[in-house]
Image (cartoon, rainbow, N blue to C red; front, side, top):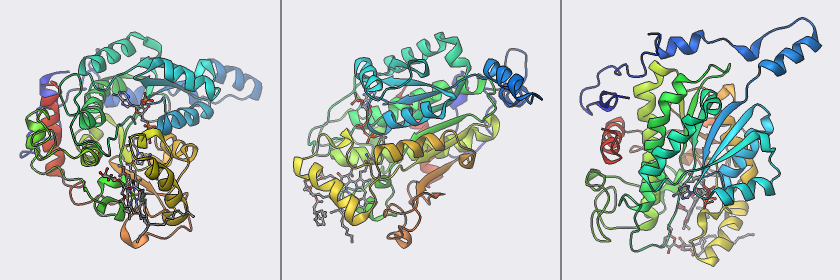
Length: 393
Ligand code: LMG
Ligand code: NDP
Ligand code: PMR
């Protein structure tokens, strides 16, 4: 990929530069995708013969899931494996934990591969991509990248830092994924046509969306002029460790990172959807109030939070249900609208006027982003700054 790929002014909105553009044979990536044989859609006359041929030609689609060793990522992996036609790359910081969890949930060994991915190290992200490319079969069948991992320090008063010196919450949850998804875009485009479109999903959150009640709980997400990001997020508790350059606040760093996740998808969609055909999406899975994400909260919070979400807001969803939602967004035909921010009805997780409507909890809709999450000038600026900070330019 050339540096040109990322050269986009936040002011001038030129047509996307053609960077996936040419495959070895000079065919544009989009056309190459369109022309690839639809191997798993062949029609046969005899059912038995059809089955034999189907089994022989059907390839497992590869899905990469980051943070697949816990919570939402683990149950998304389970859901994809249960679909039958996926091989999941569990991209995890602890290979041992991921193997243990896969075994605990009884995953079919032929349906997953655990690979080490430490999102707090740019070098590790690059080496993950290299190793993934080294596995020709998995790489060739790449259908979706699911950026799910995150960390949350609700009570932190002092920032901690990634190996590259970025404030850790944003470093892992936004910047690590930003580098990963930019690098793997090329592989998504080049992968075989598996009879289904390619997807790239970064998990968002209601708490980043200030047009919801949950998003109004202080401290609210706000990335301001992004001066902290521009300076590399390496300040101290008083200045420069937050994206807005201001004083460090643990829970705000998480909500800011989730805001960047949403903005990244909106901007990737604007830049690349048309050219690559990839469906870019983000989503709010519901309030999975009992995952280890809240491990650093007080015990009283961890006790009350699931109860309140279950019985009062009704925003609670199980890890299983949330996993099905994220797996569906990456595999089902009803989620091919690129640039969408999916949320599910019910549970007080949407805009004010729908708050207590719990009559239909299964229907997903493209949620209206808050002013900041839908600000395309900010999306472009955040993207360009992130490109510089992770060294893509
Ligand atoms: C703070 O801690 C940290 O202090 C701060 O530094 C920062 O880290 C922040 O953003 C993170 O967290 C949280 C602290 C204060 O809470 C606790 O540690 C105590 C546990 C409180 C649990 C609150 C969970 C809230 C979940 C949703 C609430 C829904 C509200 C109801 C809907 C109303 C809509 C109009 O936490 C606070 O912010 C204050 C806590 C106040 C709790 C209010 C809850 C109201 C409901 C009370 C009913 C209780 C019944 C229990 C369950 C019933 C089951 C039958
Ligand atoms: P968990 O803490 O259960 O899972 C987070 C995953 O991220 C874990 O696998 C964790 O690894 C991994 N991870 C953390 N740090 C790193 C790192 N440096 N490098 C690589 N992987 C890392 O949380 P959830 O399942 O709840 O969260 C999943 C996603 O859902 C997040 O994006 C979160 O923002 C989002 N979300 C969650 C909500 C909820 O209510 N729980 C609500 C809205 C959104 P390890 O297993 O080693 O800890
Ligand atoms: Mg919230 C309908 C109201 C609603 C919903 C759906 C959530 C989801 N929360 C709601 C309301 C409230 N919360 C209210 C009124 C309060 C003040 C009492 C409140 C408090 C609260 C705290 C302290 N809520 C929290 C916290 C957290 O630490 C969680 C957080 O922000 O993590 C980043 C959280 C959440 N509330 C939610 C959801 C989904 C979360 C977890 C968000 C995430 O993981 O991205």
